[in-house]
Image (tube, rainbow, N blue to C red):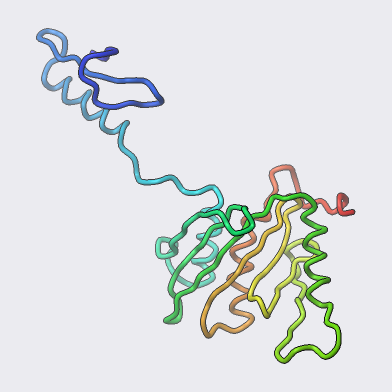
Length: 201
């Protein structure tokens, strides 16, 4: 029978669970069944997925790269801006592909995105060699842009400022944009409805 006290096999939801075996209370088969249930309840399939590492993003990256979802690794962390981010890594076309998604929930996401775009095109004098201004991307919400010189995409879901950085040696612009777009779309969904631009100052 299950009791409080006695020999403890594990805990579930903070409650101690134990099995007291005594003659006449539980037969051998019953005891083994209870033990199996306790062990199953105490076990797990490894560490939980970080909230920032969305499964749909992992799947979208895999589809874009033409590989299995299971071959796309992920790791959550806190970025230098103090915000959560997820690093998705895989191999494609003989190279290591790193797609990092940073989710910044600071205030005025639209304003900061537009300001970043404007500052990136403010070149005084002759543009430096190899300079490429940010390029607007359709279908990802207002002001969504690709920054060629920084290999990153920025967009917003009305609450978060989303930055997707791609590190893929030898990949062209369209290839980088493709995997960045695939990664950011799952983060554009907003639980309170569609993207709303009326709050932009």
